[in-house]
Image (cartoon, rainbow, N blue to C red; front, side, top):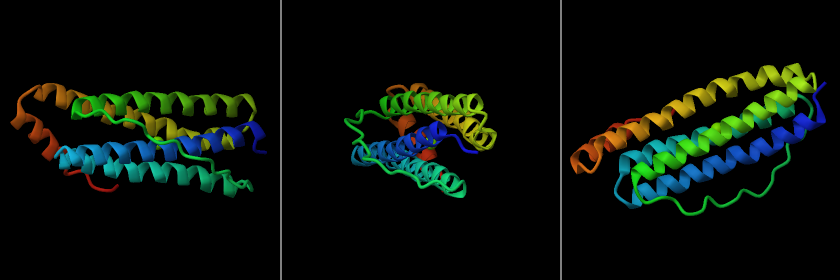
Length: 164
Ligand code: MG
């Protein structure tokens, strides 16, 4: 049986995933406004992916006979102005998401809710990828430094990201 505590934690996670979507959308808007159209595209694809993460939790709860609870999504707040600072903020955020997923997994095991633990494994793997991707982008913009043409080469590369 699904644990009530796990249901509560998953509802909170739905909110965190929608907040993540909102955060990436804000970053995408900021980068678009600054002329970094490629990074704006990458961030917009990420925005869509975060909505899918929320939907995965919604679907799982429904399949287990639970009605998901939707709560207010916080505004993303002030977005950094440079691509490097945005990349750093994205990485910091993904670290927080990873910690949150780990906590729900820990709780599921503690509550002997093994179906939820099994479902959460996909997210544990996904977070390895999210941390890797966001960290790689920091490296690319750090490597470009203050060289404008190098920054726009990175931006162009990030513009190639497509929906998965
Ligand atoms: Mg996510």
